Length: 361
Image (cartoon, rainbow, N blue to C red; front, top):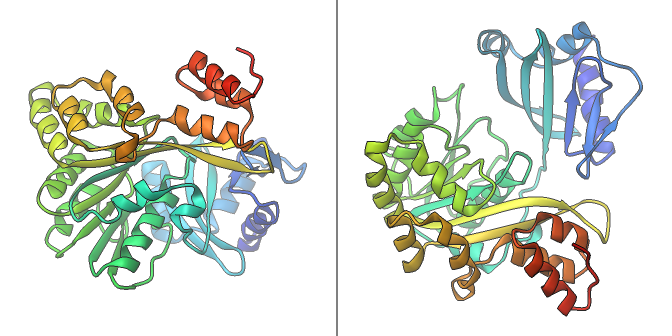
């Protein structure tokens, strides 16, 4: 088996307009197309075949890391096909992998569904901005679009810390230094501490997943830097809870105070199947760090954050339910999906019914 085989699979996946390619033992190679898995042929992968396909595209250092850690994040550039983020891992002793396609051109924020509020967050010069959502919700694309906007609009030193590097930025009005965990730095926390000595104006952290990374990011945001990072949480209120819950109980009040002072905004997003055409559309909710939100965080009243988003339209806030209702009224998603995914089903049903859309609970 040669490298051409995996490249051909990646090419076939892109020909199908697939966002992801999955290699699993006992199943044929499958592409995720508009959210659904599509087998690319009828040949089931054996453990030996899967191992050979995956190891063929790794260098010696990556193979050693995979054998040692039992999983590996990496990126691969395939000529005339595109760039992919890969994750290789062991499953019941066999090696399997998933590949996510990274578009060559970084989209504009408006093209992926964000509006003036996210553009406003890009004008901030300090504070913490979080982009949250589950795996595959488009967080990396949103952050890349934000970094692109900042780079084009003002003169800054931007440092990104990624695992792996996905979108490749070009220097514009800003200079962009991209560091990859594993090859350029040992871990996120070390890279963040080092970044503070690299004269940064903006720091992007592709994943805030441990106590030291979160602590350093909040400190950086408090001390005059704009920090943009991601969290794997389902919505904006849970992002606050997740940040705080990482810390021991005796440290949480200090972190809450720091967080309430530096939070500028939380963008949460998901992808939903479209009703008007093939594909998926983004739904979002945005929590902005106004006085009421900062007070709510300081007093640890997480349950009130949804209500503050519902009444915070003037500050650019909206909830997932607002986004779902807007898209359902426009015919972009089905009323059934709006009802299924919303927080308040009765309120959603009333709002859609008032707009002349028939719904069933």
